[in-house]
Length: 57
Image 1: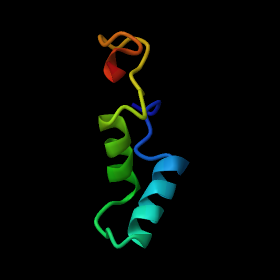
Image 2 (image 1 turned 180 degrees about the horizontal axis):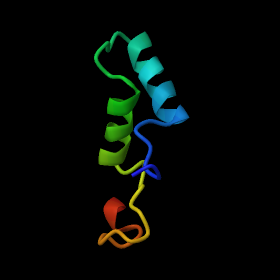
Image 3 (image 1 turned 135 degrees about the horizontal axis):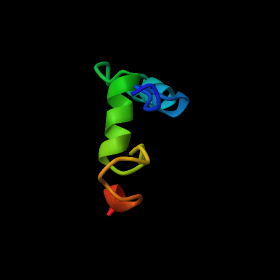
């Protein structure tokens, strides 16, 4: 699980931008989860049952 981050520099930047727009409840971890949900991040591990690229489909 150490290979999968809870947040990234990009998610921290997104969180900061959202906070500047007045959205106060989105931290870096929530922003990272959002990025995963919309397909911006595919962090499935090599031994995961989901084939590479299938998460974005």
